[in-house]
Every structure is written in C-alpha cells, then in structure tokens.
Length: 511
Image 1 (cartoon, rainbow, N blue to C red):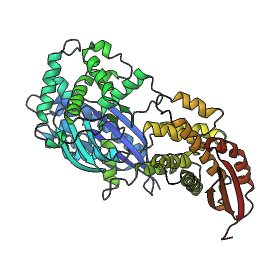
Image 2 (image 1 turned 90 degrees about the horizontal axis):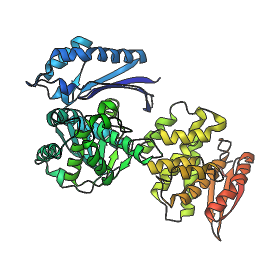
Image 3 (image 1 turned 120 degrees about the horizontal axis):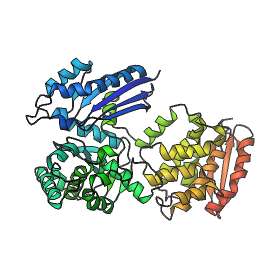
Image 4 (image 1 turned 135 degrees about the vertical axis):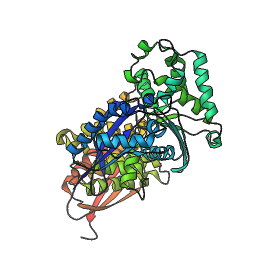
C-alpha cells in the first residue's frame, strides 16, 4: 500500500510543504505542494532575536499545513528550519514556541546539513558528475563542491537575498541600485569567501543553482528568448545571459522591474541582491556556465528520510523512469524492457563499435516511456507521451536530450516529427535531425518486434553486410502482428539508415 510523506521547509524567505506519495518499492511522486512568503529573516531584531509575535504570525499557516498533511493521510513528517531560525540568538526558544503554538516538532538544520540536502536534490535528478552547487536562500547561501557525484566541501554563509537586501538595499531609491551600492555588496561577498580556498581552486565547473534567484533568472531568460521548452529544471544559461541581467535588472525602477516577464512581484526587490551574490561567487570560482536545478533542499530531506543508508541514487534517469512507470501508466514493464533490449541490440549492431552513450540514454527513455500517454487516451497516446516526456522533468536528461527522447518516442517522419523539429530548433543541434530519424525508426522497428506485447519473439539476431541489415527472429509461434508492423516500418528504417532491411523467422530454440 502506498504511503504519504510530508516535508516542510521553513525558510528565510518562504515556507513550503511538499507531500510525496511513495510505493512499497520506493517509487515516489509529488501529490501536493503549498508555499507562502514569510520573509522570516526580516523578523529578526537588532538584538538578533526573533520574538514570539513573529512566530504567532506564521502559526496559522503552519497549522493549516499540518491540516493538509492530515487530509492527505501523511504517515511520516519532517519539518526543518534553515538560516532565519538557525541564526537567531534564541533559536531553541523559537523551536519551543512553534511546538506550543502548532504541536509541530521542528529540527534546525546546520549549514552543512542544508548544503548536503541540496546536493542530494541535485545528484539524484541531474546527469552531472562534477560541479559547484550554489543555494541562495533568503538568509543564507550554501556552496557545495562535488566531484564524481561525491560531495567534497560545503560552506554556509549567513547572508541571502532577503537579509542582504535589508542590509545593502535600504538606501536604494525607487529600486535602482547605484554602481557604488553594487560594488559595496560585491566587496562584502568577496571578502566572505577568502578563508575557503577550494572555492577558488576548482575553475571551469558548472554552477548549479538552487532556490528562487537562479530559477527566476531562468524564467526571465526563457521569456526573453521565446524558449520552446518552458521547464526550468536542467535549463542552462551562459555567462553572457547572466551578464545581461546584471547590467539591466539592478538599474530598473522597482515598478518597472515588477513588470518583467517571468519575474514574480514578490521577488522583484530581492532578485537584485540574489543576482549580485550569484555573479560575484561565480566569478570568484571561475565557473563555466549556469545550470538550474528544480530539485533541492526538500528533495534532499525526503531522500534522507526514506533512504537513510543510501540517499544517493545509482542512476537518476533510471530512478526517474521507474517513478513514472510506477503510477497508473498502462504499459507492461516486461514489454518496454524487451523494446529497449531490442533497440539497443540493433543499435550496437549498426554502430559497429562506435556507439554513443547519449544515444543509449535516449533509446532507454523513449523505449520505456513511449506509451505513457495511454494513461490519458489510448488512441492518441503517442502525442500525449510527447507532452509527458517534455514536461515531466525527467531526471538525468538535459533539455536537448529531453526533446530528442520525445521526438524518438513519437517518431512520425511525414508529419509530427518535422513539425517538432522546427518547434524546438532553438534547443537542438544541426546533427540532431539525422539522429532523430535514425533512432526513431530503429525504435519503431523494436516496438514492432513486440507488437502484441506478449514476448512471442523470444530473441533477435541482427547482422549487417552488403548495405543491408538482416534480423533472424526466434519465435514461439507465427508472429502475425509483429510481421505486419515490420512491413509497416521497414521503409522508414531503410530511408533513415540507407540500408536494405530483411528478416527471417525460425522456431524458438526453447520452444
């Protein structure tokens, strides 16, 4: 029986609740998320204390979040507080007040714990082996270095977008930052980094951003570029993209900045200090590019709670596919496994020792998810599967790989495929059109060899020679449906690969 798990994050800028549904096999999905701005870091007085009145102001929200958990039948709950409460002079007292006001048991994360949870969120959902993670919150900024998917260093600084806005932005007139105000904040951030040599000694790594600052910049950039895939997870921005924002956003009047497409009004004031923190640290570390992670602290807290012994998943892509297939997708796991095996076997034969790892990831994704759209409508499942693949936020795939997987899963060379290639030309590379035709036609051939989804064909033995591909099929009995599909897809395969296709059918050796 599936269980519900709640993760509550009481941050410096906002308070969030995420509820996960989890199967007995460990697959999971998010079924509810609630968020409310709180700006707790602004409620800390000059004496460093957060008074009980501030806690009373958020108590109704916390009680409602707990009611949401009860309504969903949450059986395990983890509530964590970050910098605003962690750095308050009376943090223990705050925990007691929250318990008295709401009956909520709250844990205060150290900066190290917060950085580690963010690291888990990244490595469990992205195909990145080495990088620097930067998590700019409202009241703290965590920087984590990892290599080979292993965390090496984490440091937490007691400054974030909200408290830095209060400290350096109070004298800003109409929201327009002066060069002197920007330089003053940059100098403060640079000086804070000086005792952490590892930040400066690992140049050329991608910066992976968690939290609202980089995610918001990504949304603005996508609007500015009319980007064809409005998904922030694994979105990449160049140095030039962020430099553009650095030269424009701080100098806009507040009322005009609020109207920037992609920028929420409640972040219009703190986007500038967040941007200054981001760019200053990026330049100090000599980063190579900016990547956005849609997964972070809450995801990491979830993995720690349910997989305490081994919270890092072995393969983000396989884990993500498992999660999708485990929830009401009307497709046989044995069938898609056979389709992927057939596709990879054909690909290895055709590649002749020059196989590309990315191509196999694309085939795995397309083969296992090509029929997910049947959950909505069987007769149009391919089009629905395209939307699912494009927007599900599949872990372990870049945006380019996501688009390619969707195109391969719904290969239709005379109609939909050319249209989708044009739609996503801003993401794809020139060589990808040939890749889509080759892998798409190969996948349709693999699907055809198990058209009945019964495993009637027990093994395939492809061979090449004389500009031809011949497949010897072993079958338990006459595969009527499979033969019909092979005939239907043969022409597209032959055109894509410039090979003559033939096959023969023999009784299964085990029959």
